[in-house]
Length: 261
Image 1 (cartoon, rainbow, N blue to C red):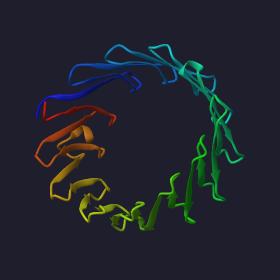
Image 2 (image 1 turned 180 degrees about the vertical axis):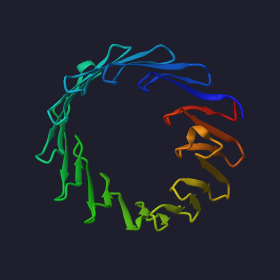
Image 3 (image 1 turned 60 degrees about the vertical axis):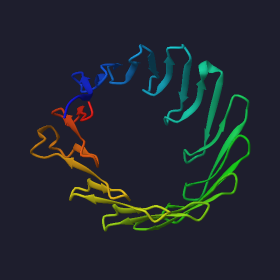
């Protein structure tokens, strides 16, 4: 195994200051005293700056082209208006008493509308051109049916979690689950299955695709002192190539070893 995919340098607060890829190109980050990102610089030198209002909400984004996006909020932190492309495009947001967004208007006054059922689920979305998408749910809030603007219907069935997803042509994708609701087998409309195996902690340890090729995942162990907290330690593809993941003492990803260089 050789090569580094990326390295992360952090400040004393643990915030990433610089992320360097295996090609040596870096992205840097600057923060304010509250730990909020105020500036990013991409490998090609392009900057993006971020501003915040007195309540800590991001209220401006300015990129290297000097185009600025501005946002205003109410006291609940809901976006009231967004000015995009330097103010050329303005979107205004309106809410109901339950804080659900009900109307968004653009700079031309065209409105997109959201309707909700009695349980607060989005039941209909009407775009600015009048195209409607309708959704229906069961009592538990699971999406049962979605009918798009052209009348195509998508259906969903549940048992222990989602069990079938049926497209407008009647083709079903099936999900088999264990008693912990984890997907153990995903079967596509052609009947081809991908199976998954888990460890006692619920982490996927093996994925076998329809052709029988296996991808393996390993997690924190004695061989990986830096990932003893259960983080992903390695991934091995069907060809035997293994990627290793290293972490700092706080369990934060610090770099990745790439077998392909």
